[in-house]
Image (cartoon, rainbow, N blue to C red):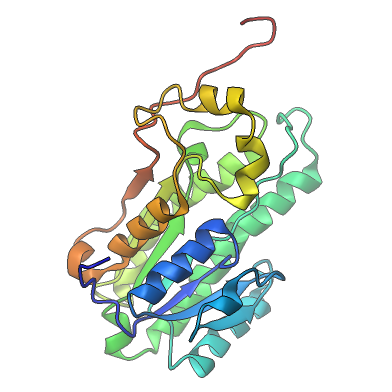
Length: 266
């Protein structure tokens, strides 16, 4: 990206950094000169191929683990985190309508996808409160939401509910709270539709499924990871997005809804 987004040496923490979108986020922000702390759960993926980043492990379901994550990021990567990108998440591959979904699946999805972001934002804001003004000047949180949070997703209600909570619950709430700590602080959500990631690889091999999924998408294509990571970088920049807060940016090719396929109908 040739435009200077003002992210040189800004400390960015990216959760779920080893995944498809996460790794693209690391590459994008590294190219923009940011100081990157890459959070992982267990898998490092290709992160070791990116020079000059800090890789830290944490369980997003554990408050102590998240508290330690921010302390280690500050100690090992030149000071407190300025920008938090909440990218991690799970999407159970089994189809389970709410009437058949196990309580264990529901609770685990929300624990990772919603309680994790709550704990991350809590620890981030507490650390931000005592950070120097140079850190607060770049303060913002960006959630990675989903079209599932806007349109719902049959047989994946746990995932849809968790993403909707980020997009329409935490984003508008936190954009009013962050300014009490950092006056220029912002909170936004970037919400992709289908993206060609390793997590979606098997699903996207089904050409009939992809055709149905894109029927309400004018651009008629599956997004690349770069489509998401570059939009996040633009929103993270105070230079070009310093007056943008509390918004949901849909990176979905213009998707207008879902095609409903009912049993017994063609």
